[in-house]
Length: 365
Image (cartoon, rainbow, N blue to C red):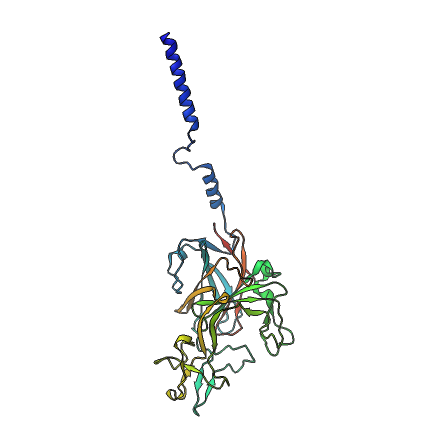
């Protein structure tokens, strides 16, 4: 009887153990990852960047936009060199591009060799007779200054793949050097056959901690539309303006006490401008031709910092991944590639060095 009861108790105990273990989660052996995590890791490790693409790497901290390029994130971002040529003055150079991103913003680092820092952008010069005159390129027929200008860089992004042939030709698909305006604008105009492009236009003299946010459409040249397809995004305030009187005969403002008299730095900050006191200047003195301030609104949503040193420009920028503006490219789908063109201006108003195809930006998971 006791033996039978012992067997019953043993059977109940085994049943209890089986019930208990069936309710416990099955754990992977030590050193092994759960199946879902293994699949995710495999997908990430299997990701391979397209050849010759700018790869934006994921980061946790934003870089300091100062043109120093000494933030740790850049050490981990691949460098793509893009040769641009056929520009005025220095002719050709290589633009080195890097990119990173976080949950909110895209960051880019661009650097290129340029033997000179150009900032003498059509300044005013006092004459021997006491009048003022602007320094001008004697060969400029209009909008084609290649002597007294500034260094610039521009990028054009295809908005929603709306510009035909952009992937293969880049910005080149929007360049036009013929038409009735050929004598007025010998370097031509920029406009699309259809669709829109997002222009990021860095101007070393005229910008204040920003790239100028503009756009490109299919508007062609006329006397009423001299800029053809190039337009600025809407703004709330700020920007730059010529430093001149209403009759354009002399400068309206001067810099604060101690300001350089050699045209440097090429501009006067709006917050520092003073009404011109003509008696303080002698023949040969220069006053910058630009007054500027930060841009607010849609046109000012690309933050930037830059520095020229030892014959190299270094430009760092930040832009929200998604701005909501119809005039901007939206980096909404990080699994998709985004195409852009890049151009460099060496002391040139329009005659830029360019690459005759587009570049591809991809986001590394």
